[in-house]
Image (cartoon, rainbow, N blue to C red; front, side):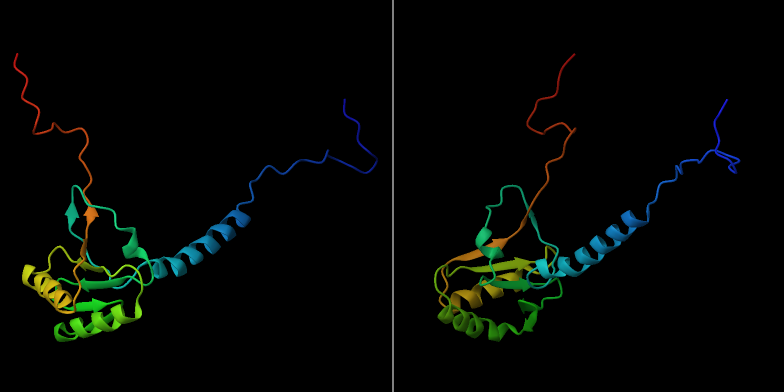
Length: 157
């Protein structure tokens, strides 16, 4: 037996649908924020870096005032996002070093498919500018899991 007020036919029911509209609004705003911010996080030109097993961490290369030269696979050279010619590298590095205090290291990031001669030419130009400390930027090679190591001897039955 249920008690209904006069004029009511059914008891009031609770709506059990989930309202996802606010969640979708928040996700779209976050997506737009990440799309705008992500390109700003990268310094200079994007290259497919070579991988190394034991790279040394160089946090100084991420600073805004770091001198960073990129070599892409086509043999083009970049300082920041500006393309430069090979014969301009030494002079531009000298100009930047004159204005810079502190760390005088020049960092080179090269595409892993770039020609060795192009990278060597950049190092030579940087040395011509009077720089002794050159850092080569690489990515850490991920270790494989689940596979047998080559240093373990095979087991015998």
